[in-house]
Image: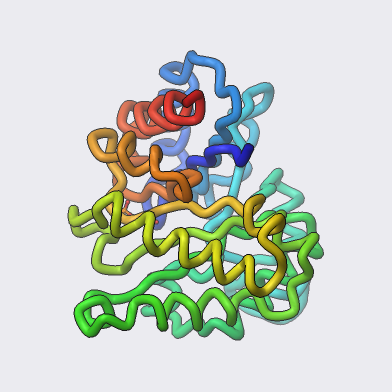
Length: 257
Ligand code: PGA
C-alpha cells in the first residue's frame, strides 16, 4: 500500500528563529504514531541546518525547495544536491509553479534537475498543474500530460518509484480555492495512467501523487480519502504548527481505512 506523504513547503517564510519555533511546535503537537504516513518539512535554505539539528531523533524528514543540477562550481546563488545532502535533506521540491512562473523553469530543465536529484540520493517532489485559463479552456489534461511526460523523460522505472509527483492546480495555490476532491482525483488518476502507459501499471501503482493548493485542516480529510491522492504538499497551512499537524493527523486517519 502506498504511504500517505504530507510535505510542508515553507516557501520564503521563517527566519532561523521563527523556524525553530515552528519545528518545536510541530514536534510537541505531533504525538500520534505516524504508521504508514510520512512527514516532510521544507524550510528555506537558511534554516535547513538548524531544522535538521532539531529533527534529530524524530521521524520527520527534511526537504529543500529547489536545487541546481551540478555538485559544485561557479553558479553564483545556487545550491547543489551535494550541499543539500550534507545538511540532511532527503527530499527536494522541483518545478514548483512559482519557480516555473518567476524563474522561467521549463519541463526540460526540471527533468534534468530531477535526474540529478535521483542520482544524488534525493527524492524529488516534482510539481505539475494547470493555470485557471488552461482549466477554463478545457486543456487541463493536455497540459498535465505534457508536463508529466516532460519531467519524467529518461527516468527509469526503478527511479520513478522513488519520486513524488505533486499535482498543484495553479489557480488553487495560495488563493483559498481548492480543487474539489473529485476534480483532484480525476487529474491524479490521469497522472497515474500516464505513468502506467510510460512504464507499467505495477510501477504506476507505487508512485506517490500528492495534491497541493490551499490544503487546510478542513478540506484535507476529504481530499486524502480519494483513491489516487496519496498525500499533500501544503503551503500556507504548514506555517502554523497546529494546522500542519491536523493535516498530518487526517492523513494518518485516512491511511488506516
Ligand atoms: P498553498 O501552497 O497551500 O498555500 O496553496 C501550496 C504550494 O504552493 O505548494
